[in-house]
Image 1: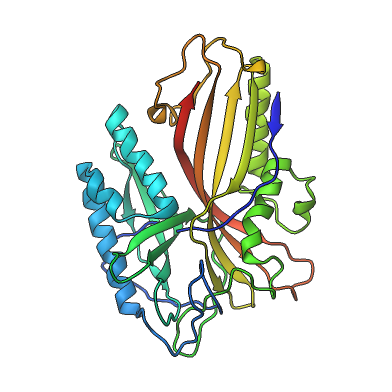
Image 2: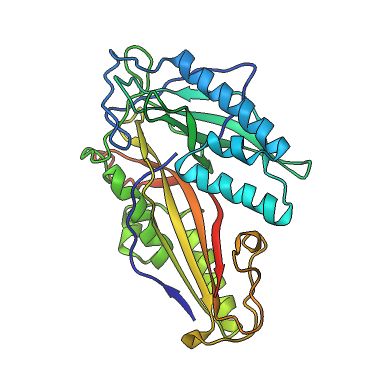
Length: 346
């Protein structure tokens, strides 16, 4: 039997990069904050465009070298928050099963740098990225990345990334061309930014008939994600198993920038928790496990006599939250990506 478990809470997030030979610097806008960051006004530039580009280039150079060499220490030192969980899973798979760490080829980045008066500093980058797996290039996808530096004693880290399903909206700018941050509690939007994740989760957990579907659009990261989980539940039921899922909040930094129409671009992280088990929590035949979860199982692949398997995915999403004045509009989750980051057979 497939079960949907409860309601979700959310908090915040962070993403990817490379040293580009040519960088087009574009600036977007918004007013207010990211994960308790200060409100930028355009008059304070604790982070300049040139500094953001240098931080991005340094990340790309270091991450590319670490992935090629399988260098766990350097590969994990330059990521944080949700991105750390994802990259850590890649290096775990390298050590446990020999699966090469994912490599990327980067296109020309576009920068969205808010005018920040002080730490923590952060910025976003939208960049075309091609995944290279076992030497085989994948399709080019535009990816939204978030970099953050919490304090002077810490280095820049990539803290989040989301592959976009749709184009980014036009972004707002201040008089100096800097992006404008938006407060997580901004009341001028259809949803307060810190409510976007829980609202998405309600649709993923409950489906298109959930009340939350009245304010959040259907698509790959909402109704289609629900359909995929429900299908897994049906497949488990056919095997005499029980499957449960829950998309819930993760306490990582969340980032918001103003769009040109007065809305907000929101980047945040969520956890998808799943359990597949024999009804009644009794031992039985081996539980089928997805190939990308197997390298993460601390106890090894489930065998006869197993009760079940739990798995945790770390997801990062990008959403566009319209202004309240946009009558009839819905918040749209325009991108997302995730990977298993924990598994346990019991």
